[in-house]
Length: 112
Image (cartoon, rainbow, N blue to C red; front, side, top):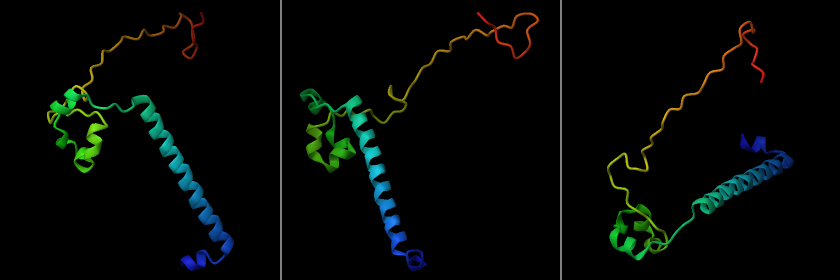
């Protein structure tokens, strides 16, 4: 079936070109997102106190790449959830409703 679909060389070249362009676009978008994340968050090296206090072997990334433990600051959040990172408090704000002037139609909006 594949041979019949690509029996025309021109069709196969178009398909391969489509794959190359699509892969390039996806790679470019992913790279742009990663660069934007890096520039907004950034990476900091750990302080000497952090290296002493934090259990570096409990980070899965550092267990595979030991050299990263001295290059990327990392803090153990613990196993109890929710942590302060996972908790959010919101206060409700009252929103005043617009009142229609007497005699105004239902769809009319008040003019200032």
